[in-house]
Image (tube, rainbow, N blue to C red; front, side, top):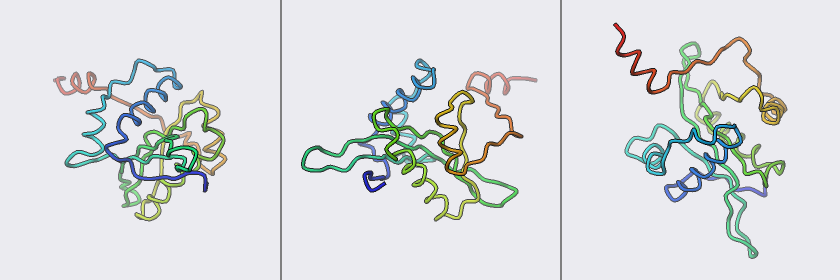
Length: 167
């Protein structure tokens, strides 16, 4: 992991983060699902009261080349009433295809784990698509446990509005 530098994302990284999000959406077979603009991301990550945070993984600059972003992690805090502690939810972890297998994903996963550990979080959680075997194998090789007993549910913006307008 000495080949990588993990740092907090800055507002200057917003275009790169959005590009990575689009690349991730293509990989996850949802190329048209990304609605977030650079302005949306800048506001969420760097606005007055950010509730989401990001890390950038890059190959450090050397005499041959400038620093090059290889991936990112986006996370936010949740809370476990049972533990009485905050947790971290990893929304996205992405490494560019040409850097996969070099340890960048592990470096990002570990960097967020370090934040969770240092801040006394009781959990570190994320989701992965059922068909994404490479990611599942990667996470399980790091000791992550599949949560078979939980089923994820989601309401999109339109569904939230319809629900609020029910009698």
